[in-house]
Image (cartoon, rainbow, N blue to C red; front, side, top):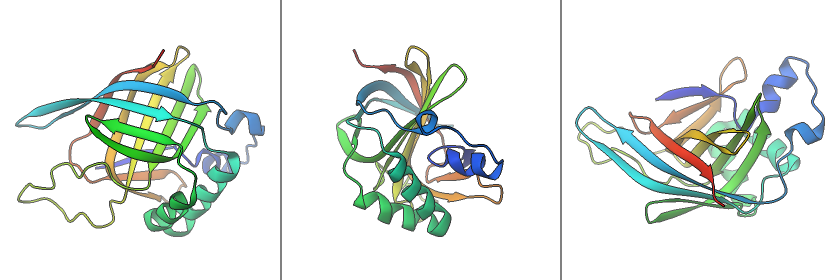
Amino acid sequence: MKREVLFLVTAVALASAGSVLAPSALSGQAAGETFTATASVKTPTKSASAPVVIAVEHFSSDADRASVTAALKIGGTPAVRQELVKLKDAGYIEVGLHRTTIKYAFSRPTGDGRLVTVITAEPIVHLGAGAPDAKPKSGYDLAVALLYLDAKSSGHGELAPAAKVKTNESGAVVIDDYGVDKVWLKNVARAK
């Protein structure tokens, strides 16, 4: 499933439009945060849900964002993965009992809240991998979570537990999710 979203490379679209934002408008927050949610996926034959914890120990710097953005432009998923592996661990995503290390976490303001993007350097799970008509796993080497938060840091999101990333001709990031069905993050809230 392909989804075009502006995540980790917001600056690509802004730069192509000639806009310049002050570093404080795009930079990640220094302090960490923990979010809870429920991941849910619904297929034509069944549905499933699991608790999710996204613990961000620190948000990525502008320099980290620039290096990941450059890698994305140059070589898509393989280059991004190589760059992510070099970064300091930024926290973890825990889905059910499975924990995966976050390598990139970035928060940017939106009209009435913010968008938090987290990326791992390995997939969380290849949903549907056991199905008879499942596509090969090769290349789905990342996981991406997007949290759409209001001013009170609650909201919703989506999770691509095994994904490829690239840019399209207009510079937007395209997430190619291994799974056919979208994994929604419901009841996202910042932990107290």
